[in-house]
Image (cartoon, rainbow, N blue to C red; front, side, top):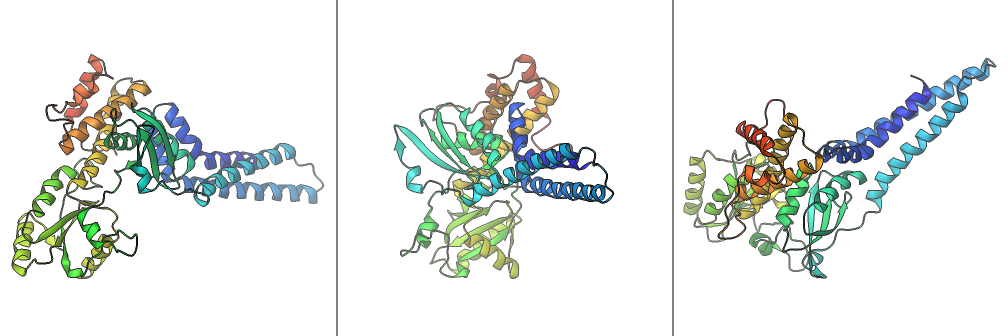
Length: 404
């Protein structure tokens, strides 16, 4: 490979994680931007490595030609190509670094509760964004929601700040839209009883803490989503957690994000008999108590306050599951019939919202029924395309062997 060709390759590698998402959004495949963003540092490092090799090769060839008093062919064009490639690689590298170095702090919790000109504001945590261009698909997905007036997406703070009309949309729909773009969003953490009890009066630290490690027990469970095994199943775990909190002696019940562990926090007056009764019920449901060093590690993770869900908070996992299933169904439909990008994106948002309602039991009003997926998709599909959707739904929502 010639030095100038290697320089061009280095520029392509360095910009692929940033230009790639723009191209994917343009052709209606914004969900793929999350994949590129996840590995953007590898692309950038690869670009730097190739550029270094290109300069070394160019200088070696130049030195040989100078020693032999020969004219180096393509010397000017090679030098020009390498200089341009260097500017591009360093420029995109500096862009990504500056996003983290000079990142502004996300809005405070107080700002989330304020109304600005009649608008509601929410700050949504978003996982998976790793560079400046990762923000584009998320912003694009949010602006497609009716009622969204302004958005500020930051890869540095891993958040999306949205001003919206509460009469037209809600945070659940905003989260579903972000998840449909391939990134992982969740509703902002709400203050809960256990956190409030553990809060240090002299600080602003609201991470869960225990008076003694013995006030919590952990149980190994299998509550992963069938359609998304990487997360816990909110619709299955919610009734279990709520029932546990009705048991005598139980203060709170939590599920970890992976759906593999339940934490039972005991009330101060819980005696050995109460604990044995709850433990026996969990073991009847094939749960196994975690003990020894594994318990110490689980306790440390629990006290971090990250990735644990109590009661109805597991609806956030259901919302994430809905986004994963919707994206999968849309890909299946696109594989069988031509679907314009605007309809594909709208279909994904509609399916995500319909699935969210089914998984969380949200009917959006006492007299409103949950709509079927076909009904939710009717705005975006014609009769033949609706038949295709019905066919792909009949295959199930789990990932097929060739699907992610």
